[in-house]
Length: 424
Image 1 (cartoon, rainbow, N blue to C red):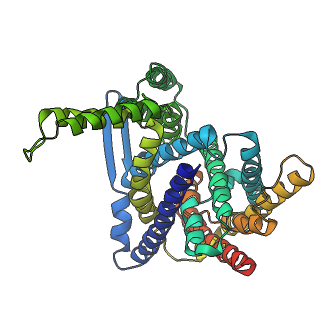
Image 2: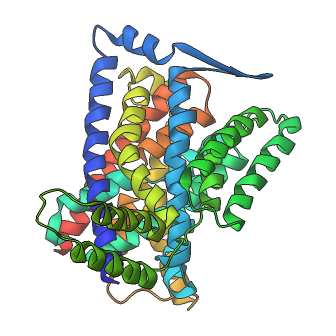
């Protein structure tokens, strides 16, 4: 339990710092886009880059390489988090998982319905207000320090994991281009090989990643958004280590004893001691959980490079409110979906389910806490921007929706902070 809490604290701290970097990257993107080099900024991200492998030709702009390529690594990390939470974390039992699952479902369904109510003739953007930006939300909680109930952070993490799973399902099923069914067999064979590695006890990460690249290529060729390859790969990464903790301790103690027995007067390690150290290093790799190790390695890359780069390449929008008025119903659907839909969905679904005795509210969280988290869930930001690029093709609509996402996320954050500070 203590190890899990320390790991959670490290995760939250990284997410908080990532939130700060995302904010800086976003502000920088908006400033640059509205400066004298704005056209150069736009031309850079729309520069075409191509890759040809056999009869498959992958040609995309630099922005799409970030959105489809680098973001696949982000979704790989998301998939690893989801699998870990389902196996050993806050979603590992019905009692633990029921409350955040109901909250997340409410936080996805109500915003989507609000968007559709505003855009009955063009409902495809319903996924935009469904998303929650975990980095920003946790960043705000961390900035508030001891004024925040620690259990609130746990609840927000669990809710966000389920929310991410919902976003993955929406991206996989709704936001796809024309399906090229001839590549399904290729992708299926590769994914089967990846699972064969798991079944046969392969714990090295590299073979999974090599096959994962091939899976990404064929998923992209099918027409399904290529980031889904990251999630599929994550579910196949094994969580069990090659040796258990007891055997690791036993072997390590033996190696340490051998190291100590061969201490001599020469100020250089002898070959016996080197062998002991190498044996410890060998077992060090084998005792680590492949899933947790890969998640840890990806988290820093995602938090401090991929997501800030994604924000800088996608958040640059001209501040022109004429585009908002021209697409007012779409923007209102997004804004009200985030500001009203998220808190109403998260609070309303959990409150109703508790009254019906379907779930039980954790004793260490108040209804005021849940309402505050509901508003923090309205910080869509990077995930909302990501889905915006999938839902719309018109650059004018995309720019207007981004402004709506920025405004809604800011308002939701302010209200959430006020509710937390008022209570404490």
